[in-house]
Structures are given as structure tokens and as C-alpha cells.
Image 1 (cartoon, rainbow, N blue to C red):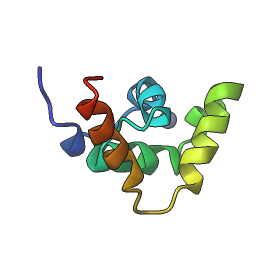
Image 2 (cartoon, helix red, strand yellow):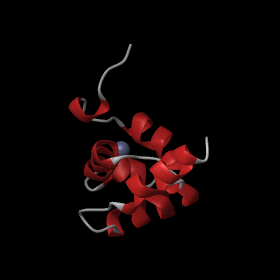
Image 3 (cartoon, helix red, strand yellow):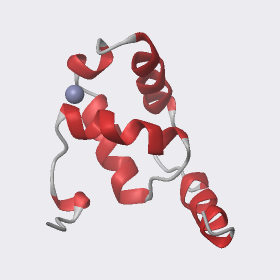
Length: 81
Ligand SMILES: [Zn+2]
């Protein structure tokens, strides 16, 4: 059960399950792009709830290439967390 996320289109549940990690800057390039690709055209996610709707709006406002998340992830890994 180790499907590569970048090869699998994400469903709403999978996207919402990743939003916490997204906010924490823990998603790498492929996963980040998968989340962004989904929420860009999904009204279900948009209307899911206040907290998530605001998060998704933030996702949509991100520039196409966001390296800061990957950098932050490496920094966190360096601190053991
Ligand atoms: Zn969705």
C-alpha cells in the first residue's frame, strides 16, 4: 500500500486529509501540485467548511512554483520532526 501520490489523482477526501500537512509546509512539490490541481477546480472542497475553505483559497493563491514548502520540510527534517 505505497502508491506514489504523484501518479494518483487525488479525491476530495485525500485532498482534505493533506491540508493540515500543506498548512504546515510539509508537502513536497509533487504532492503540493496534486493538491493544488484538485482544489483549483473542485467546488466540493471549496464549500467543505470555513476553515478548509480559507485554506483552499490560500492554496489557490500560491504561485505555480513554491519551493518554500520543500525547503521548510528539509529544515523540519533536520530538527528531527
Ligand atoms: Zn475536492
